[in-house]
Length: 163
Image (tube, rainbow, N blue to C red; front, side, top):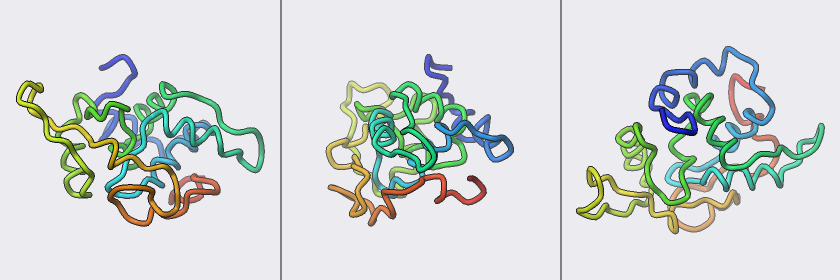
């Protein structure tokens, strides 16, 4: 397990799949809601998600607070039920232990990638952050992906089986 709790088991079949059976903390609900708003073929960094949430005040209280580490922790604990591969590291490296599963999703969705150099361990490509990064706008921002759905409102309202 890495220092922030991200493991392949947490992402695809461990604690993440049990999230529907438990009451999630409000901040976790909001993080997962943002992950589900990210269009296919696009990504947001842990910091992007934290910043986006800081600007979204819920109707029933103050804006959610937390930074990239808190977003990473939520994704590690509960992210298996959402498109976890769309919330990424700022440098575009793929999540250790889940590189191949994430890479398959990126290729299926047409997410912009940068080919790995021959010196890179395992020759695993990185995300092309300049082209793949989503800004949370309805039009999907720059680069690939679809229209992006709704960028405002309560992200938890967009998730079936939650709320």
